[in-house]
Image 1 (spheres, one colour):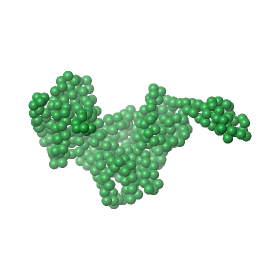
Image 2 (cartoon, rainbow, N blue to C red; image 1 turned 30 degrees about the horizontal axis):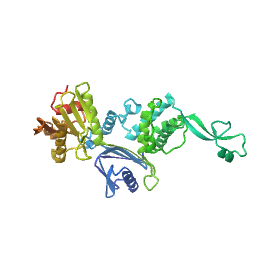
Image 3 (cartoon, rainbow, N blue to C red; image 1 turned 180 degrees about the horizontal axis):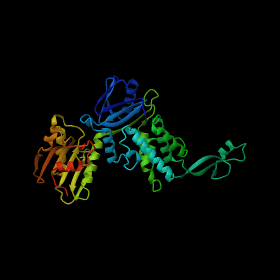
Image 4 (cartoon, rainbow, N blue to C red; image 1 turned 90 degrees about the horizontal axis):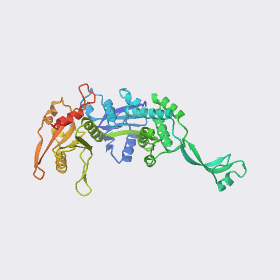
Length: 419
């Protein structure tokens, strides 16, 4: 989607109307979007916004605002846009085998274009395979009597036309909620792809897609769609359609601007990525890996560490990892984070716990944390010595690509032999 202007910012950056491409109309649209999403995306500041931990892209009124991970500031040679796409793919938010995901190296693509291309590819595959038909009830005039004759409607509509029948009958076609949802997402895509290489492809897909009754699909309707054995191939297309529809905000500002946003919480994405990498590393061993394992704390409150590694047979071999997509201030973990790790150690009877941060292993400022001794807490009730430390893993490899050894790096930081 070729826009008139593009602004690139980072997590926790500020954007004000002093920027040449960002005006009050854009600001009002962003504030309305933020309100619609429970004020999760930004903090309002005088004449602007301060971004939070969400990364991705927002497009409104010809302006694209690209929000990149904060680590991009520390390494200007790294392609954090490409790395973000690779991380999304590793976490299952992008289909690895699709044509769009294979083209993430194309520098001109933004996140919306990648997802739009993925969606068009999925729709083309479904059309080629053959779209599913369903039965539905239709009420209207027909030239042959079938189904149930609606007497009142027949008198009202066909008092003169005796050759017609006003009936309620079953129709077997493509016009059902599943296709109406996909068609609605295609219409949104058409609006935001004008002027780009995707527009022509979108028009061709719309031409081949069967006509459906126009429907402004809601979140409740999407969540109510249940796929069966016959419609199972629709799963990926439906997920992408849901993402497009629920992030589309028509007339969100006081003007005529329509907005679409695609934002991901980097804290959550980093946690998912680390969990997946550790599971890959420990696959086939006697260790199981759980994400967001919970235990009751006080009343209705729960403790939920990000990653729990546990030996299948030895209950004393439990390891806790809590991921933090932030750099600790003053090179030291906060007291609240250390207290949290203390509670995890106690409740899970963990042998070791670690606060895991993103950091360059080549950077000397983090070397002290990588070799820092675990602090000790002798638990007399379980005879387990609880240990904890801060650890850093390099997100990038030597070629400034997304590191493929992060799982091994994390396990090495625990200073244990996992087999």
